[in-house]
Image (cartoon, rainbow, N blue to C red):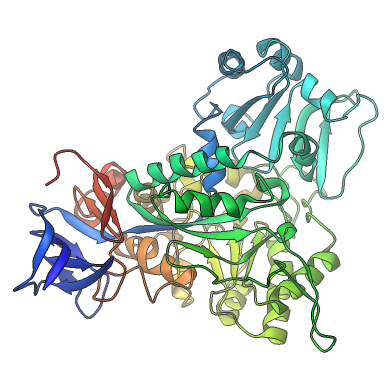
Length: 544
């Protein structure tokens, strides 16, 4: 039998209960065709791994690929340690920006600088008078310079209030440049849409970076509309990137609810919401597929815009807020479910989670459970009774372990110790019988899957403090989350997550298995190669 690839002399962790370990694997037409028994097979390429560890390819079920890719092009503020660092970065970026064009920066995490923000006028000085827009790492706020605010129509002393958003002001009623949630639209209406060629380039850069980290599958959690989209035709950029061979990873893409519109149907049919041609969750193939529809119900804890049942620490009477009228959101959710869409509801605070659970439950009662599971994105604070309800309704709760080392203390401070104990849950999800997946929310937080595995195990904050010791899981459980669990949450367990005959030949070659190193060293394990569909997407020069 002629095959495309044989991997031999490896320590293969298949994640398949029927054949948990192997030393040899054969690939034909992008799928695994044999484990160990390759007698009589000849291959176009045979690679001897000399005892290296092999796992199924890692799968990040909540990232933002176009957003991440654009950060690789824009000014990077992720490592700044002072406001002067920000001004210097803006000045450098301005040197490559035409007069009158916007200077755009990304990755700024205000929490790391005491939740402070650069001066709007100093930003204009640094940019040489060009308007400046800084994207905060959370994605739920940004900052404009004074010139940027002027172009966005924000006039000092006449700052309007907004549904689902806030234009921040100082004690004199002067806008300080920070725009929260839906207020960001004031600037985005000027900057968007991005040219499709730019989006294709962003996807190329992002997926190349993913492959270097062992990722073979990604779910892009929100495209084509809202404050998180980059162009109405963002899905077309994905399709073009795929056609041009620019994608190094498989992609499941979530359109945001704003991208869907009413669909005319027969008088006897319920009202529906979707794409005009009727495409819905599951459309596509193994390289590019439509995922659930993404709905933002609230904001973020870092920005104190997530909706909490109890008030924020140090903010008497303040609970955060929903991003829209709940009845209007619920109506759109029901219409999308009627059109066959799975639901992915962003709900960070526990009050927003109450809304999300009720909305999904109503949709399931009326339209049944979809093949691709319904989901809650983040579920940062989850009360015990909510955990039980998630399990009973078979709703996946997609958490981000890397939030803990990135800004765990920045989360714990506004929610307090008690709510900190019921946030970013992992062990309790498994104990409740729920699937647990890996996700990063990149570029909001660091996205390397090995760091995510380490964070699931250690749960150490940016200050080295334990965040919820009772929610720690084992290395084996964390690896399972990044492979099998992620496949289950995305409804793709029939094709990926394990290395077994018939499964996609998506795998990662590591310098060591995560269980064989100290937990604090997991993120430092070298990724020697990544293979998607039997083809190398990353390969160190000395391998094979």
